[in-house]
Length: 297
Image (cartoon, rainbow, N blue to C red; front, side, top):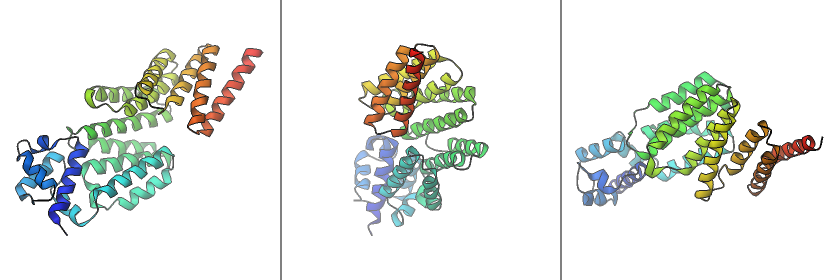
């Protein structure tokens, strides 16, 4: 087993996850050329050098040695991918099974990986067990973990956790709390000007629009929906576009702008057909039938 190669691969993986260049990781420690040789497995770094690299990447130095004898980073990525897939499918039981299965895996004890697991455990505690207090407590614990706050991907992950907290507050009709949390998430996102992930911003726009709709602030809800729609169009994304049109239509319908609402419901229906979102399509069709009855009565 080539320990130098395995440690080098882990350093490269964590550096890329952190959004750092080799030069940025090397700064104040060693040269970029030395980092390059370490990542290629040509040399095994001194323990003092490895300690400083680990500190900059926000992990314990023992992580590299544990990883050399246990799981590879491609496995970690696959686990995270599967968890996110099950979340999108609302298959929270499978998410819980995966978290339990990986709980003792040392690779998931690395701060940013453990934060990811706590985040999804918090989601499961609400949607699987209906335990709001425990769910919010777990999500707050995830936010309070000591992770490298200078790493871009970690900042995005923290914004995603705030998004989950806001969604759960919306679910239990704490709309004002939900709005305050969304605004906090937007404030964090606004600081990441050069690395904003449009999907994260679209999710925040949609979630906050729903909360404003619930308190009857239709104007603000429409504004956020339009912001989300523009992000989708400008980035050539279908992501949540149907849902944003549907939410906008609901706002207009509640203001008795029936023609506008019908037009937007129709757009939403077309997108749900394209994305094969059968349940959403059925809901929109029912709204259009109801609107038609109201117009013709």
